[in-house]
Length: 464
Ligand SMILES: [Zn+2]
Image (cartoon, rainbow, N blue to C red; front, side):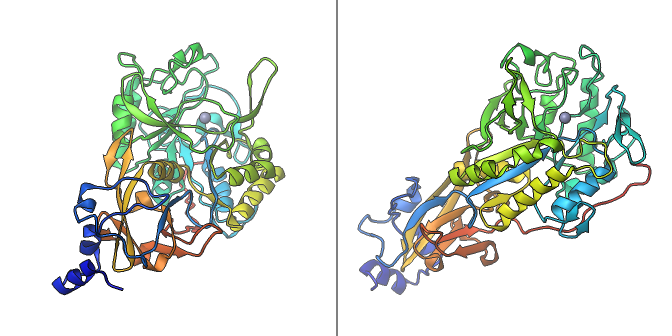
């Protein structure tokens, strides 16, 4: 039945689209966030919602049907292009590979810009590649491209989304370093010039890696971190944050596998603010309290145990699992136990319980979901969900792009009579997905990223 107001609207020719919706009073139902904009309540309060309009019950924690989200966050240590390609063909594609049938998971890696490690060992038995030739953008600390062409392609194609500091500066003598601010200046200039943008930073290595940052003040150990210390010859966050880094893992260990949220606001020594994030790095500590890292392929079985994955799904949380998937020097790279662990992970995704995605996507989703601002209006038996903003407490309130709200999902009585809008504009039908009840309610959401199982591997002459 049309109410008097609806008849009036119909008579005056106002359609059922955004205009009518924005005039409608925004009766917030249970579960909706009380975030009504002034514009939404401009109409008379008597404009109660028509009984036929679906009720919105708030946000679903994860895109349907998933109950949890996990990212593998692998550090570039000992990486070679050969090993990188072998591991990514197995994890990302669905083609037959030497490690088994490809798993088709969304997994992105990290990279170094420079290599200055003075330790002596072989990082790849195939070709006897010394540590000094591990995969990095430039050769050594020069400005001569080494893996730049491959790294550029992988950033573009989604196989790399993280910078593992400006380079591998670990030294046998941890009181020395080969890092200088000038290397960061040149790195940022080169990355920008080639359009190589990543927004996740993970700290690396021993105390020679003075370009690390984010944990100064957490204890005496972290005094080595000078990347965010103005006046230090190693200061660079005045360049690195404007370059685009938004999320930082500041060299902090954690034995917590699943968290309700993995991000936290982080104030740097120079006053800049970024998002910090937690990675799971270990299960145990020595009796003396030292961390027993399990972030090598040999620890992957313990990391991705059935118990961990089950608990993650049961609590509906996030997990970012720190690894060094190219950390072994062997031709096959991943031991059988690690391969089995990755297959287990893939089964959890295939079952619809766990969404496996690249680190940057998980972190952006975490922020978008936790700080989403929207309101709900009703008109002509339809319900309109207006996504207004991401009220990001670190980088500021802003209107999101469609990519920023991918996966955002709302419970509603009736997806077919619910309209998802960005502001007051309906989101294109191709980007909207309707779901049946998961036991609580049906839902409507912004489509998650399309699955990409293409083989993006490239070979670069002269690069191991
Ligand atoms: Zn590292």
